[in-house]
Length: 445
Image 1 (cartoon, one colour):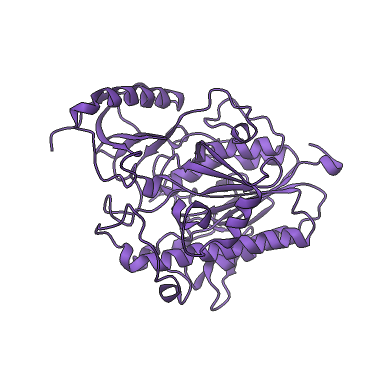
Image 2 (cartoon, one colour):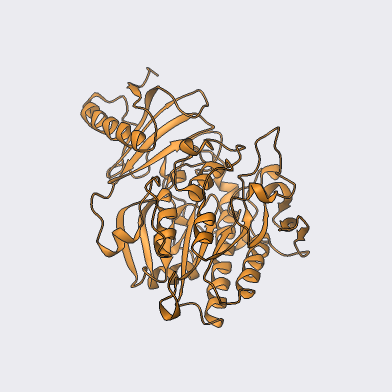
């Protein structure tokens, strides 16, 4: 680890849940939802084409902690706890002299029904090595609503939300406490895992701050939702309210870093686990190959990420663990499935992937690739970690059909395109530790 003015940077990983890329001004949102993120993008680096590696909460988090695709870790769906033999980013950072802190939603401790910490304190052995500061809940939507609830401290005691205080503010309060209480002797990594703008499960709706329905009523309907069913009409203003609250708290974090005179030496990364298609593609909000749930915001600002640049290369959530380690000067393990995003920022990347690869679970067993032009997805209806046989499911030409309304998967004119994308998909599956599958044509409708 470096010392003095060349010491390794502090890192804040600011993580939202179920946030579409187009909620942000820097990605084209017309309303002033994300002024702080927009400023951060103007100072740092924005990844224009960023996608999740698994559009489901727990599996996406398993990938972030381990640097490996969820099926390789064993966390291929929700309610599978992170295996305790997995070396996480927290373990790596601790070995390299960092203090590590975690606040918010964990979602990697329970394996229902036999191991259930969804509304109980997560034991230390199930926390993935986050040992220096912990204020979290395994499944935050089980211990809280937008204006009530609690998390748990390291000793298992309840960390209560103050009455009338919005949940995202409370999670941020815990993160600010971590930052304020650091001695400055060692660099630190803070993982801030918010639940917003995820829907509130038991109330079956999105819960923005009070007044969201009025404040954000005059929104432009995202193109992929225009004319569809789903539940976006009653929920989108609250959804934007959730995103605006996150942005407010991003501003609080950056303001505190400035007040403590550590802003220049701190890397802040903002992204999400997946987006939301508002029940327009299936009966849920995610778990599909469409951009509404696959495409995410991704902005970084700080050491290695400056200049107000926009990077158009494909970026994936699977690249984030390698990016974090590289930023700290920690060698990226060969077993990581992603690569450090610094390579496409500074132009040193060789053979950078021209597609994002995603595993999809719970609604199906699916695999897909998203290139700049094409979205190609295969699946089987059975819900399992992987399959030896898949059927083609979707093909979209995003250049001419950015709303992804015309499925070309059965169009004979695109047989050669499908064949080429199938080979790309097979290659990416093998690189992710899977076997080469058989891919069959889509069954007749």
